[in-house]
Image 1 (cartoon, rainbow, N blue to C red):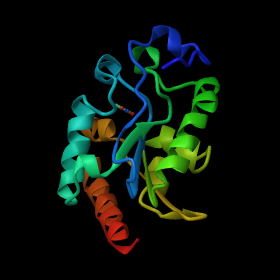
Image 2: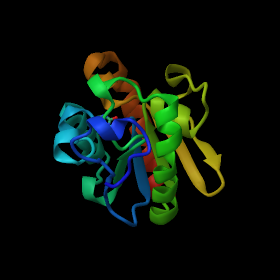
Image 3: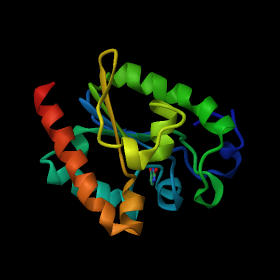
Length: 172
Ligand code: URA
C-alpha cells in the first residue's frame, strides 16, 4: 500500500494485492485490477471475476480454498495491458507471494500472465492447456475469463483446461 515504484500508483484508488487461502495449493494469476477491483481493493470481483468464481466452483473448489492475484497490483488506466516497465517492477511482489504461499499449481489467466510467468513469447491460443514444470511448480495457462466473455467459443477449451487443473489438484 505504500508502493510508489511505478506510475500506476498515482492513478490507483486501491492496491489489489491478492486474496485467498494463505496455504493454497493452487494460485490463479491474472493481469491486473480493472475498474471494480480498483474500487474494492480485491481481485476478480467484476464480471470476469464472477465467471472465474463459477469455473472454480465447477471443478468443486471454493474461491476461499485457492489464492487469487495479478501480475500488477494497481489498475492500468483504461484497463490497458501493463507496460513492461510496470510488470518488471511489480512482479517482485508476485515472487514473494509465491514464496510465502508456496502453491504447487500456478494457473496463468491469459497471455499477459503467461508471458510474464512462463515465456515472453507465449502464444495463448497455441500453448494454453499444457503443463510446464519449473522446479516444484506445475504451471499452466488458460484463457482469461474476460476473453471467454468476449468470445464464447473459447469456453470449451477453457473447460478442458479446468478439468486438467482439477486432475492435477487431486494428484499433488
Ligand atoms: N482482470 C484481471 O486480470 N484481474 C482482475 O483482478 C480482474 C480482472
